[in-house]
Length: 474
Ligand code: BG6
Image (cartoon, rainbow, N blue to C red; front, top):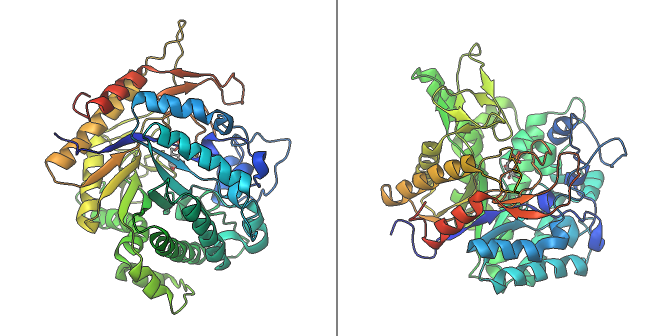
């Protein structure tokens, strides 16, 4: 058998991209709710344009999303029909603490996830919960500047303690922050950070990162105390960076870019600031405020497993004249002439997944979990309602083969695979619905029109068979 017994096949979503019901059940406004679709999306996500309220000029795709808030039973039934062993979802922080700093949680929010987890458990689906997937209660941005402030550690860990305690018998697998390295690339979307003129952006980002890293370690400590059986992981926006040529200068740049991302996981997994990061901060005059107890906390509360998203590899050159760019997950990269790309310019590199799996396993020697992977594509609904998404099947098949090689040929320990957007949902980068990842189609367009009806794509039955045969028949 290539895939181990008990391998966690499933799919992944995030609250802000699928739930909707943004003010239902006592939920408070969150950062993700003020990120509009359209031309202002990127400046807002980057923290360059301040928009902390919604207005009538913009369309906010998270407000309704695919309305999973009211449809989760039906959606989870479809996941079960595909044979999911695992479902990765995120809890919306502002459903539990609408403002983020209340003394007591919102019972209605807690009840919602109780019901959702019960539904998963009914079908034998293991929930894998991201505690923070690109959302911060907006009140915390307005009052303390979100993760710029050390106070956030207290608010976040209280939120963690609340959900750990409440769901300790329903959830075993947890991730503290989704794509924690996104803080560097999309500071507002990733961490609720806004910049004022004249601020030292790099210093702010690394200070915020320190707060998240301490919060993550503290959450890991609390979680393990509440239930020693918990498996608590970190989450990286993964994908190795290749050098454009064998010129050592290109190789050096690729190492630097990879380290920028590894930085977070090095701390979460090895428990201390890597020397290269300390030196980089020294060189760049980045001064981080740390408390005496931080070192010990980081050291003693490392993660149980490493999870990551993988859409593509990256490519970099030391020569600024080489600037033939294409889009990628959150930031652009050089075009790799050996790779095809999706309609959104994200390059397709299944072998890159095997490379990433090996790099992470070599570096950390901890079990890995691929919690996002997939092809964002335009789907065409044919006259009879059929959606022949062979391109998606092809993409996933090749990536599953690469996983299989990493397991059987390289000995990588892999816990599971939850492809992204198992049901169509709102795109994080563009706010579109047209960029679809799902096995399940949702009738809704970029302007928010549609019946929200669900239908099975061709990939639905294909993935069902993959799971049924534990990855043998792909
Ligand atoms: C990851 C995020 O960056 O990639 C998801 O964790 C996101 O939230 C996914 O949706 C795919 O990106 P996009 O921009 O195509 O939605």
